[in-house]
Image (cartoon, rainbow, N blue to C red; front, top):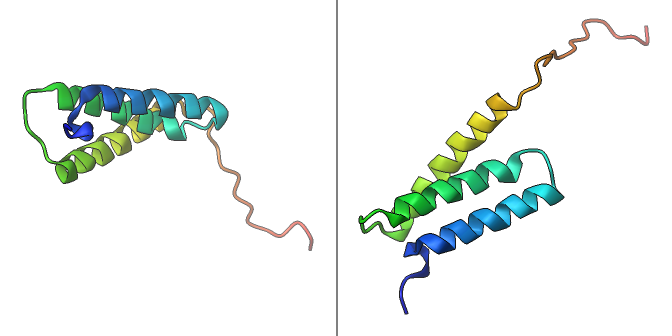
Length: 90
């Protein structure tokens, strides 16, 4: 049996499952991980032989980068945090 993690379609299937999971729990959390899995599918499709630990590291880094990119892209324009300097119960 071939190493399943070395198949590009496994990563693409994981990306699809994570994208579907994003619709059930919105908040752009799983979408960044799904994008990382989809990009990892492209990396696996290249003719390089990457071991599982290195592949997991690539997946983690790509997921983190895509999560930060999505967070920046979908940030509301009026992202103002209210800072209270005094207690209103005085």
